Amino acid sequence: MKIAVQLNDDRNIIHVNDTSEDGAKSQVEKFGDKGWVLVDSVPAFSIDQKYLWTVRESDGKLVHIATNLTPDEESQKSNTELTNFVIDQETDIEQIKQSITELTNNQLKNNTSETSNKQEETK
Image 1 (cartoon, one colour):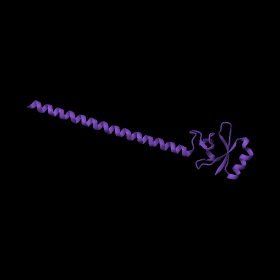
Image 2 (cartoon, helix red, strand yellow):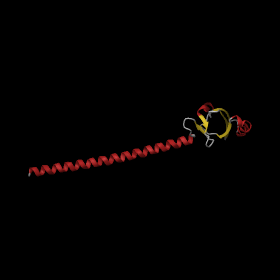
Image 3 (tube, rainbow, N blue to C red):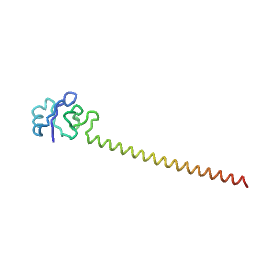
Image 4 (tube, helix red, strand yellow):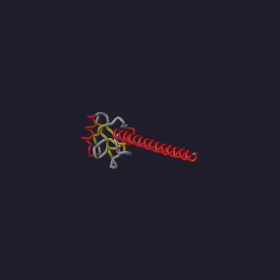
């Protein structure tokens, strides 16, 4: 569904027309020169929290001011960051396992050498 939002000079949303798509289109046709623009509504958008939103200039999408991202883009970014974190953790765990194995092998070699040396001394 399309809604009309009015932006001030700082691109803050100051008014919203979400009565109907036709009403929103009419609002923009009549008052486009007053900062009204037509945008696709998103489920996360709330008129009560319009101060958290703006319209991205590059593509005309409703985005959060803090991130300049749509809710879907924020979710995708979070998923990517989480995936990268998990991959990094798995890499760290694998490196730790390799280090432990190497230390264990070195300790076994040292113990074997000490045992051999003691056996030779007792002969």
